[in-house]
Length: 375
Ligand SMILES: Nc1ncnc2c1ncn2[C@@H]1O[C@H](COP(=O)(O)OP(=O)(O)O)[C@@H](O)[C@H]1O
Ligand SMILES: [Mg+2]
Picture 1 (tube, rainbow, N blue to C red):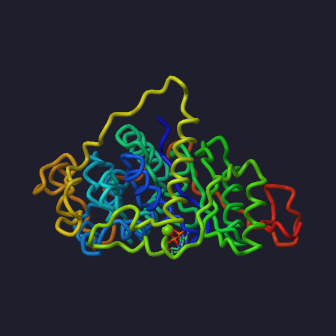
Picture 2: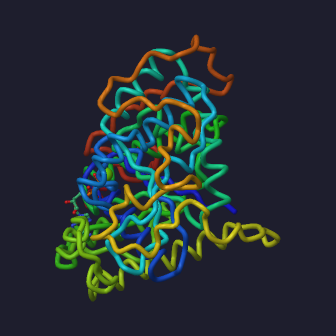
C-alpha cells in the first residue's frame, strides 16, 4: 500500500501544518482511517495543534519525540522501536481518536546540523526509509508535516515517501515556492522522488479576482494535478489550529463550508491513493497496535499519560527499548560511533537556483513565472 504523504511547499505560511491537521482529523472522524502524523518541523506546529502545550512539553521532556528517535537511529546507530515515539489519544475531536502523532521538538534543528557535519545523509535516508516502510503497514495513511525550505531531513522524506502533496496560496510568492520545489525534484532524478499526489489551493478568497486567476492558472497545468477541491480562506480553519482542552465534535471544529471542503479534499485524496494502487494490492493490517488511548477523554487524560505504544503505561519508552534517550533539554551529543561514509545514493541537498524574475514568460514550466497575468 502506497500511503505515505509528505506535505510540502518550500514557502512557509501556506497552510501545510493546518492542512495536515485537518486531513488527519477528517480521515479519522469522517472516513474511519488510522492516521499517523509525523511532525518534521522543529517549530512543532502540528504537534501543538494536536495536543495541549502541557502534554507536548511533557513528551518533549521525556524524550518521546522524533528527535530522540532519529538521534538514536542515525547518530548513535542504535536499534530502537519506532512505536515508542508514537502517541495516541491526540486531537480534540471526539470522533478522531485514530489520529496518532510522532511529535517534534526544537532540537530537530541541532540534529540536522549533526547529520550534515558528520556526513550521515545516507544513514538518515536509510532510517527514514525504514521508518516509513514500517509505518506504511500499520497505518492507513501517514502524513509528514514538512517545514518550509529544503533541509536534509525534508529531502529524505521527499525521496522516501510515496507521495507529496503541496498546499499553496493562490499568490505569487507561494507559487514561486512550488516552482523551486519542482526544480529541486528535477535535479537528481536518479535518487528517487515521491510522486505528486496533487497541488492544493488553500486560503482562496472567493471574492478575489486575482486568487481566481492564480487558481485557474495552476489548474490549467496538468503537471500540478490540482485537487478539484479548494480550501477557502475561512476564520474557522484558523480557529481549528487552536487545540481545545474540551473535546468537540467534528462538525463543531469544522463547521459548514470548511467541513464540506475538508471532507471533499479527503475524499479526493483517498480516491487518488486508491487509483495509484495496483489492482492486486492488499489492504494493510487493521488497527495499529500503537496506543490504547482511544476512549480516554482529552481533558481528563492528556496524551502523555494515555499513550503507551506496545509497552506498559508506567514503563518509560527508553527503558523498554533498552536505550537512553537524550534529555530533551540537553544539546545533541556527538555521534557515539565514528561517522560512516554515506551510502552511494546519498548527497547533500543540491542547491536550488533562485526563482526567475517576474518578467519572464509563463510558458516554460521549469522557469515559469508564477503570475498568470504577466504572460
Ligand atoms: N484555509 C485557511 N483559512 C484561514 N486561515 C488559514 C487557512 N489555512 C491556514 N490558515 C492560517 O494560516 C497560517 C499559516 O498556516 P500554517 O499551517 O502554519 O502554514 P505552514 O505550515 O505552511 O507554515 C496560520 O495562522 C493558519 O491558521
Ligand atoms: Mg507548518
